[in-house]
Image (cartoon, rainbow, N blue to C red; front, side, top):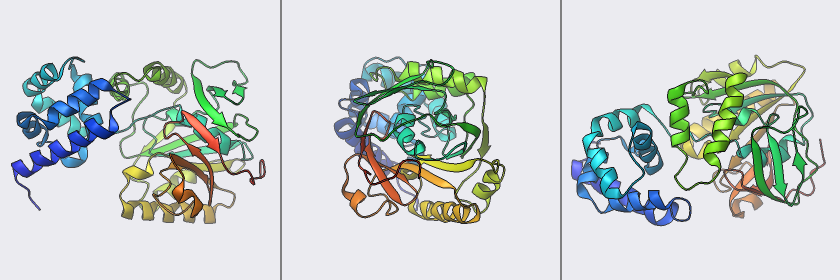
Amino acid sequence: MVTSPDAEASRVAERYDRFATQEAPGRSELYAAWAAGVAADPDTQRLLARIPAERRQPPLVFAVTRMLGAAEGSFAEWSQWLAENSDEVVAECMARGLQTNEPLRCAALLPALSLIDGPIALLEIGVSAGLCLYPDRYSYRYEGGPALDPARGPSPVILHSRAQGLPDLQLPEVVWRRGIDLAPLDAASAADRRFLTALVWPGEQGRLERITAALDIVREDPPTLVAGDATDDGLLGAVAAEAPRGATLVVTTPGVLPHIARAGRTRLFTQIDALRSARPGTRWVSIDPPGLHDRWGADAATWPGFALGMDEQALAVVDPLGAWVEWRAHDVAARR
Protein backbone atom coordinates (compact mmCIF):
# COMPACT_ATOMS: atom_id res chain seq x y z
CA MET A 1 0.00 0.00 0.00
CA VAL A 2 1.37 3.40 -1.00
CA THR A 3 1.30 5.99 1.77
CA SER A 4 1.43 9.75 1.44
CA PRO A 5 4.64 11.71 2.12
CA ASP A 6 2.98 13.37 5.13
CA ALA A 7 2.04 9.98 6.60
CA GLU A 8 5.60 8.72 6.17
CA ALA A 9 6.99 11.89 7.76
CA SER A 10 4.64 11.36 10.69
CA ARG A 11 5.98 7.81 11.11
CA VAL A 12 9.52 9.21 11.13
CA ALA A 13 8.55 11.67 13.87
CA GLU A 14 7.01 8.91 16.00
CA ARG A 15 9.97 6.56 15.61
CA TYR A 16 12.59 9.19 16.39
CA ASP A 17 10.64 10.52 19.36
CA ARG A 18 10.52 6.99 20.82
CA PHE A 19 14.25 6.62 20.26
CA ALA A 20 14.95 10.01 21.87
CA THR A 21 12.87 9.30 24.97
CA GLN A 22 13.20 5.54 25.51
CA GLU A 23 16.28 4.13 23.79
CA ALA A 24 19.11 6.66 23.62
CA PRO A 25 19.07 8.25 27.11
CA GLY A 26 21.87 6.90 29.28
CA ARG A 27 23.66 5.47 26.28
CA SER A 28 24.26 8.42 23.93
CA GLU A 29 23.19 11.93 24.78
CA LEU A 30 24.21 13.08 21.29
CA TYR A 31 21.91 10.57 19.61
CA ALA A 32 19.11 11.49 22.02
CA ALA A 33 19.50 15.15 21.04
CA TRP A 34 19.60 14.40 17.31
CA ALA A 35 16.54 12.16 17.51
CA ALA A 36 14.60 14.74 19.53
CA GLY A 37 15.51 17.29 16.89
CA VAL A 38 14.19 15.06 14.11
CA ALA A 39 10.96 14.46 16.03
CA ALA A 40 10.39 18.25 16.16
CA ASP A 41 11.54 19.20 12.64
CA PRO A 42 9.12 18.53 9.74
CA ASP A 43 11.76 19.33 7.11
CA THR A 44 14.14 16.67 8.40
CA GLN A 45 11.26 14.23 8.78
CA ARG A 46 10.42 14.65 5.09
CA LEU A 47 14.04 14.05 4.12
CA LEU A 48 14.24 10.84 6.13
CA ALA A 49 10.86 9.68 4.84
CA ARG A 50 12.57 9.17 1.48
CA ILE A 51 14.37 6.19 3.01
CA PRO A 52 12.36 2.93 3.18
CA ALA A 53 11.00 2.30 6.67
CA GLU A 54 13.16 -0.79 7.23
CA ARG A 55 16.31 1.25 6.48
CA ARG A 56 15.71 4.44 8.44
CA GLN A 57 16.18 3.29 12.02
CA PRO A 58 17.84 6.09 14.02
CA PRO A 59 21.05 4.12 14.80
CA LEU A 60 21.48 3.27 11.11
CA VAL A 61 20.77 6.77 9.80
CA PHE A 62 23.01 8.41 12.40
CA ALA A 63 25.82 5.93 11.72
CA VAL A 64 25.61 6.47 7.97
CA THR A 65 25.73 10.24 8.33
CA ARG A 66 28.77 10.05 10.60
CA MET A 67 30.45 7.59 8.23
CA LEU A 68 29.87 10.02 5.36
CA GLY A 69 31.32 12.98 7.23
CA ALA A 70 28.70 14.55 9.49
CA ALA A 71 30.29 16.14 12.54
CA GLU A 72 29.22 15.17 16.05
CA GLY A 73 27.80 18.59 16.78
CA SER A 74 24.40 20.11 17.48
CA PHE A 75 21.19 19.00 15.83
CA ALA A 76 21.11 22.22 13.82
CA GLU A 77 24.57 21.45 12.39
CA TRP A 78 23.66 17.82 11.71
CA SER A 79 20.34 18.62 10.03
CA GLN A 80 21.99 21.22 7.81
CA TRP A 81 24.63 18.68 6.77
CA LEU A 82 21.87 16.15 6.10
CA ALA A 83 19.98 18.59 3.88
CA GLU A 84 23.13 19.22 1.86
CA ASN A 85 23.97 15.52 1.50
CA SER A 86 20.54 13.89 1.53
CA ASP A 87 20.85 12.02 -1.78
CA GLU A 88 24.05 10.29 -0.66
CA VAL A 89 22.57 9.46 2.75
CA VAL A 90 19.42 7.97 1.21
CA ALA A 91 21.46 5.84 -1.19
CA GLU A 92 23.83 4.59 1.52
CA CYS A 93 21.01 3.75 3.95
CA MET A 94 19.25 1.77 1.21
CA ALA A 95 22.45 -0.23 0.67
CA ARG A 96 23.17 -0.82 4.37
CA GLY A 97 21.49 -2.48 7.32
CA LEU A 98 21.99 -2.56 11.07
CA GLN A 99 24.91 -4.97 11.40
CA THR A 100 26.21 -4.25 14.87
CA ASN A 101 29.04 -6.70 15.46
CA GLU A 102 29.97 -6.61 19.14
CA PRO A 103 32.73 -9.04 20.20
CA LEU A 104 31.72 -8.52 23.85
CA ARG A 105 28.79 -10.86 23.10
CA CYS A 106 31.38 -13.65 23.33
CA ALA A 107 31.48 -13.01 27.09
CA ALA A 108 27.81 -14.02 27.21
CA LEU A 109 28.29 -16.95 24.81
CA LEU A 110 31.34 -18.42 26.58
CA PRO A 111 29.46 -20.01 29.52
CA ALA A 112 27.38 -22.02 27.04
CA LEU A 113 30.35 -22.89 24.85
CA SER A 114 32.18 -24.13 27.97
CA LEU A 115 29.55 -26.88 28.31
CA ILE A 116 30.25 -28.30 24.85
CA ASP A 117 32.81 -30.97 24.09
CA GLY A 118 35.37 -29.78 21.56
CA PRO A 119 36.86 -29.30 19.18
CA ILE A 120 34.16 -26.97 17.88
CA ALA A 121 33.08 -26.05 14.35
CA LEU A 122 31.40 -22.64 14.75
CA LEU A 123 28.69 -21.43 12.36
CA GLU A 124 27.05 -18.06 13.04
CA ILE A 125 23.85 -16.79 11.43
CA GLY A 126 23.76 -13.01 11.02
CA VAL A 127 27.53 -12.94 11.17
CA SER A 128 28.20 -9.36 10.00
CA ALA A 129 32.04 -9.24 9.83
CA GLY A 130 32.55 -12.35 11.96
CA LEU A 131 33.75 -10.79 15.22
CA CYS A 132 31.77 -13.31 17.30
CA LEU A 133 33.38 -16.26 15.52
CA TYR A 134 36.59 -15.83 17.55
CA PRO A 135 35.72 -16.57 21.20
CA ASP A 136 39.00 -18.48 21.46
CA ARG A 137 41.10 -15.47 20.46
CA TYR A 138 39.87 -13.00 23.10
CA SER A 139 40.76 -12.47 26.76
CA TYR A 140 37.98 -12.41 29.37
CA ARG A 141 37.80 -10.52 32.63
CA TYR A 142 34.63 -11.34 34.57
CA GLU A 143 33.92 -9.09 37.54
CA GLY A 144 32.75 -11.62 40.11
CA GLY A 145 34.18 -14.46 38.05
CA PRO A 146 37.34 -15.76 36.41
CA ALA A 147 39.96 -14.24 34.13
CA LEU A 148 40.86 -16.24 31.02
CA ASP A 149 43.42 -15.76 28.25
CA PRO A 150 44.14 -17.68 25.05
CA ALA A 151 46.93 -20.23 25.25
CA ARG A 152 49.26 -17.88 23.40
CA GLY A 153 48.79 -15.17 26.04
CA PRO A 154 46.59 -12.12 26.65
CA SER A 155 44.67 -10.94 23.62
CA PRO A 156 44.57 -7.38 22.23
CA VAL A 157 40.81 -7.75 22.77
CA ILE A 158 39.97 -7.92 26.48
CA LEU A 159 36.28 -8.47 27.21
CA HIS A 160 35.12 -7.06 30.54
CA SER A 161 31.80 -8.39 31.85
CA ARG A 162 30.05 -8.67 35.21
CA ALA A 163 29.20 -12.22 36.25
CA GLN A 164 27.11 -14.06 38.80
CA GLY A 165 27.06 -17.79 39.45
CA LEU A 166 28.97 -18.91 36.35
CA PRO A 167 29.85 -22.56 35.77
CA ASP A 168 33.46 -23.56 35.19
CA LEU A 169 34.67 -21.75 32.09
CA GLN A 170 37.24 -22.57 29.47
CA LEU A 171 38.03 -21.17 26.07
CA PRO A 172 36.76 -23.39 23.25
CA GLU A 173 38.99 -25.06 20.70
CA VAL A 174 37.56 -23.68 17.45
CA VAL A 175 38.84 -25.54 14.39
CA TRP A 176 36.40 -24.26 11.73
CA ARG A 177 34.56 -20.95 11.33
CA ARG A 178 31.76 -20.06 8.94
CA GLY A 179 29.09 -17.39 8.84
CA ILE A 180 25.93 -16.58 6.90
CA ASP A 181 24.65 -13.05 6.42
CA LEU A 182 22.44 -11.24 3.93
CA ALA A 183 25.37 -8.89 3.27
CA PRO A 184 28.58 -10.01 5.03
CA LEU A 185 31.14 -7.37 5.90
CA ASP A 186 34.86 -7.70 5.27
CA ALA A 187 37.22 -6.97 8.15
CA ALA A 188 39.90 -6.06 5.60
CA SER A 189 37.70 -3.52 3.77
CA ALA A 190 38.31 0.09 4.75
CA ALA A 191 34.70 0.99 3.86
CA ASP A 192 33.22 -1.84 5.91
CA ARG A 193 35.48 -1.02 8.85
CA ARG A 194 34.33 2.62 8.72
CA PHE A 195 30.71 1.48 8.72
CA LEU A 196 31.12 -0.95 11.62
CA THR A 197 32.93 1.60 13.75
CA ALA A 198 30.34 4.25 12.85
CA LEU A 199 27.67 1.94 14.30
CA VAL A 200 29.24 2.56 17.72
CA TRP A 201 27.10 5.20 19.40
CA PRO A 202 28.91 8.37 20.53
CA GLY A 203 29.47 8.14 24.27
CA GLU A 204 29.91 4.36 24.42
CA GLN A 205 33.23 4.01 26.16
CA GLY A 206 35.61 1.30 24.98
CA ARG A 207 33.49 -0.11 22.16
CA LEU A 208 35.35 1.58 19.32
CA GLU A 209 38.73 0.34 20.51
CA ARG A 210 37.37 -3.17 21.18
CA ILE A 211 35.74 -3.51 17.77
CA THR A 212 38.79 -2.13 15.97
CA ALA A 213 41.08 -4.60 17.73
CA ALA A 214 38.71 -7.48 16.97
CA LEU A 215 38.58 -6.46 13.30
CA ASP A 216 42.37 -6.69 13.22
CA ILE A 217 42.24 -10.25 14.58
CA VAL A 218 39.64 -11.28 12.00
CA ARG A 219 41.56 -9.60 9.17
CA GLU A 220 44.66 -11.66 9.97
CA ASP A 221 42.77 -14.97 9.85
CA PRO A 222 39.53 -14.36 7.94
CA PRO A 223 36.64 -16.82 8.18
CA THR A 224 34.51 -17.95 5.25
CA LEU A 225 31.39 -15.77 5.12
CA VAL A 226 28.49 -16.75 2.88
CA ALA A 227 26.06 -14.17 1.48
CA GLY A 228 22.51 -15.47 1.66
CA ASP A 229 19.33 -15.90 3.67
CA ALA A 230 19.76 -18.64 6.26
CA THR A 231 15.99 -19.06 6.41
CA ASP A 232 15.99 -20.33 2.82
CA ASP A 233 15.64 -24.06 2.40
CA GLY A 234 18.99 -25.80 2.04
CA LEU A 235 21.47 -22.98 2.65
CA LEU A 236 22.20 -23.69 6.31
CA GLY A 237 22.58 -27.39 5.63
CA ALA A 238 24.87 -26.78 2.67
CA VAL A 239 27.22 -24.55 4.66
CA ALA A 240 27.17 -26.90 7.66
CA ALA A 241 28.06 -29.86 5.42
CA GLU A 242 31.56 -28.38 5.07
CA ALA A 243 32.24 -28.66 8.82
CA PRO A 244 34.75 -31.36 9.79
CA ARG A 245 33.08 -34.50 11.10
CA GLY A 246 35.50 -34.76 13.98
CA ALA A 247 34.27 -31.50 15.49
CA THR A 248 31.08 -30.60 17.33
CA LEU A 249 29.04 -28.32 15.09
CA VAL A 250 27.75 -25.30 17.02
CA VAL A 251 25.25 -22.97 15.35
CA THR A 252 24.97 -19.53 16.98
CA THR A 253 22.38 -16.79 16.53
CA PRO A 254 23.52 -14.10 19.00
CA GLY A 255 21.09 -11.19 18.86
CA VAL A 256 19.97 -11.72 15.26
CA LEU A 257 16.51 -13.28 15.73
CA PRO A 258 14.75 -10.01 16.70
CA HIS A 259 15.73 -8.64 13.28
CA ILE A 260 14.05 -11.52 11.43
CA ALA A 261 10.29 -11.37 10.84
CA ARG A 262 8.18 -14.02 12.58
CA ALA A 263 7.68 -16.09 9.40
CA GLY A 264 11.41 -16.03 8.75
CA ARG A 265 12.18 -17.11 12.33
CA THR A 266 9.82 -20.04 11.93
CA ARG A 267 11.60 -21.09 8.74
CA LEU A 268 14.98 -20.71 10.43
CA PHE A 269 13.93 -22.87 13.38
CA THR A 270 12.85 -25.52 10.87
CA GLN A 271 16.28 -25.35 9.19
CA ILE A 272 18.10 -25.61 12.55
CA ASP A 273 15.92 -28.53 13.64
CA ALA A 274 16.58 -30.33 10.36
CA LEU A 275 20.33 -29.79 10.70
CA ARG A 276 20.37 -31.10 14.26
CA SER A 277 18.41 -34.15 13.13
CA ALA A 278 20.69 -34.81 10.16
CA ARG A 279 23.87 -34.26 12.19
CA PRO A 280 23.35 -35.62 15.73
CA GLY A 281 25.34 -33.80 18.36
CA THR A 282 24.90 -30.38 16.70
CA ARG A 283 24.31 -27.65 19.29
CA TRP A 284 22.40 -24.38 18.93
CA VAL A 285 23.38 -21.41 21.13
CA SER A 286 21.54 -18.10 21.01
CA ILE A 287 21.01 -14.77 22.78
CA ASP A 288 17.40 -13.59 22.45
CA PRO A 289 14.70 -11.50 24.11
CA PRO A 290 13.07 -14.06 26.42
CA GLY A 291 9.57 -13.55 25.02
CA LEU A 292 10.59 -13.72 21.37
CA HIS A 293 9.97 -17.46 21.04
CA ASP A 294 9.21 -20.46 23.24
CA ARG A 295 12.33 -22.52 22.57
CA TRP A 296 13.84 -21.87 26.02
CA GLY A 297 10.75 -22.86 28.00
CA ALA A 298 7.95 -21.03 29.76
CA ASP A 299 10.00 -19.91 32.77
CA ALA A 300 12.45 -17.95 30.64
CA ALA A 301 9.64 -15.86 29.13
CA THR A 302 9.47 -13.82 32.35
CA TRP A 303 13.21 -13.25 32.69
CA PRO A 304 14.59 -9.70 32.50
CA GLY A 305 17.20 -8.71 29.93
CA PHE A 306 17.96 -11.25 27.22
CA ALA A 307 18.20 -15.02 27.61
CA LEU A 308 21.20 -17.16 26.76
CA GLY A 309 19.86 -20.49 25.58
CA MET A 310 21.28 -23.72 24.25
CA ASP A 311 19.26 -26.34 22.44
CA GLU A 312 15.97 -26.41 24.39
CA GLN A 313 17.17 -24.89 27.67
CA ALA A 314 17.52 -21.36 29.00
CA LEU A 315 20.85 -20.99 30.76
CA ALA A 316 21.35 -17.40 31.85
CA VAL A 317 20.02 -13.88 31.87
CA VAL A 318 22.45 -11.69 29.93
CA ASP A 319 22.97 -8.19 28.64
CA PRO A 320 22.23 -8.32 24.89
CA LEU A 321 25.74 -7.03 24.14
CA GLY A 322 27.49 -9.16 26.79
CA ALA A 323 28.17 -6.59 29.52
CA TRP A 324 26.80 -8.90 32.25
CA VAL A 325 25.82 -12.54 32.74
CA GLU A 326 23.65 -14.04 35.49
CA TRP A 327 23.75 -17.84 35.36
CA ARG A 328 20.44 -19.52 36.23
CA ALA A 329 20.75 -23.09 34.96
CA HIS A 330 22.28 -24.57 38.10
CA ASP A 331 21.06 -28.04 37.18
CA VAL A 332 23.07 -28.19 33.95
CA ALA A 333 25.84 -30.76 34.15
CA ALA A 334 29.21 -29.42 33.08
CA ARG A 335 30.30 -30.58 29.62
CA ARG A 336 27.25 -32.77 29.19
